[in-house]
Image (cartoon, rainbow, N blue to C red; front, side, top):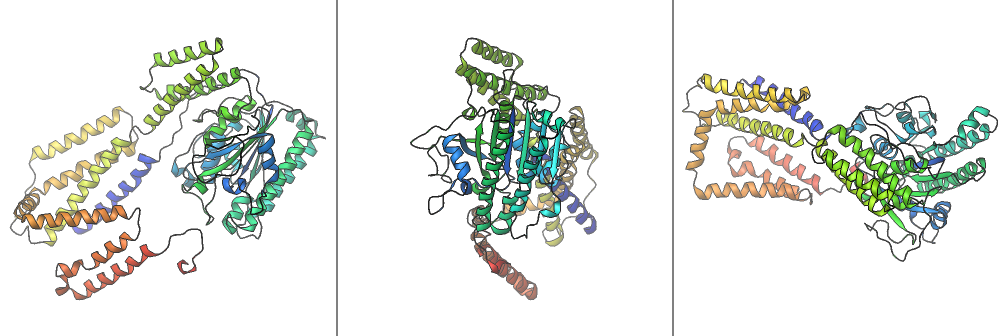
Length: 605
């Protein structure tokens, strides 16, 4: 293979390796073709108001200042006297799009979703808004259209401000939240003089969604511990208090409205999000109103982490972000979102044991629908029927705790099965890519030995491999292609799985070089060979330690800088060796520099 062809082949092979990551790890978890299921008992609430404070950290909302005062006195009073509270654990990436999808649709998009666009859905999915009778939403043009365009029919209404209002360099971004609150108040005032709208607002199974972007914008611009961010929390608290008063006044305090406040993600002290630090993944969750359990005083809290300790003495409950979707569905009696993997958090519900048992059964059947579409093997049809039969018998005999336990078992089995089949091809594809990568590495080593050393000087020009050798690899390629065709796998799988065939063919075609290399290694003295192994082991350990201690890379680069001197390349190319040493030493400074963290560091700019 000539040099130009070798370079082109190397680029193409590494492009395949890079693209394969998305098919191996970043695949969509969505399943289509399910039947919707809803609770048949009367729901506790006729309507739901969902507040999502974009970028609100849990500790920023719950913590007290130095004087023992809260930045959100209204919400603190709700926790103490009217509702339930806790934290919602979001998943990586902690970005607005996947965070809202988890909240409203109940499932987690794959990591690559953040790069697929914001205003339109890259894939179709069901949501709590789609299942509602009507949904009215106010907020950012980056978020609201995602769910309106994915809805069936025209029952999801959006009211967005202009994108130009989202100014991260603005002095104060609370105007974004103030706009939302003002629009909602005007909306309810106008409904009093609009007979059609008034009639719609008195339907059951309706949702009001308020997306509050000010905190995220102020957090990016001024950081979460800034005066602007804390002032924004106060503004949000005051705005929520006003909206609650307006909504309850409009409906005559009928007690049929449920309220939920949460966030799509948190934010680091530096003002960023997207990773997995607790400040990014722990978001607040406060629920009150119809169907929500009242606060229960406790003497201690079962905190799972130290991030929020010491704030409240009312009962605390931690859930995952996707659990909020089935909670909302249960409260207003709409079908659970078809793609939801959330488990109904019974700890937040204030209802009869029968309602809780029926809700869990509906939740289990909804997830089981996805299970059936996947045709999973870990839970047989007879086992599904048996668990459902036992659950219904338990409900009929008013053994509600037993039925809830059976539902949890069924949900866990279904979720485990869904996860198994979602990652079913991961090992197979990973093995194919690994074989291709190892084969290419061997081939590069052989080419270097062949062209840049004198080890192969005695080797005559390669003979053309015999027909059996060629036909053998061709047969392997045909069998792999046939295997992929039978399973109706995507065309990209053919590239990943067939790539090792020509790569290893090229490796084994260089068998004279391999023979010389093996003979050379067998003639190496034991002490010298052991020395090489020690050097390789130390190098690998340095790379492993660098995941935990960045400064170990500095040590490795310093050692690496003296390598040309040790092997006496200094005599042959002094200028090149000098550039090598200087480059390694300059690069060795980088791991010693501070990472982006809580405080600004002008020297990094």
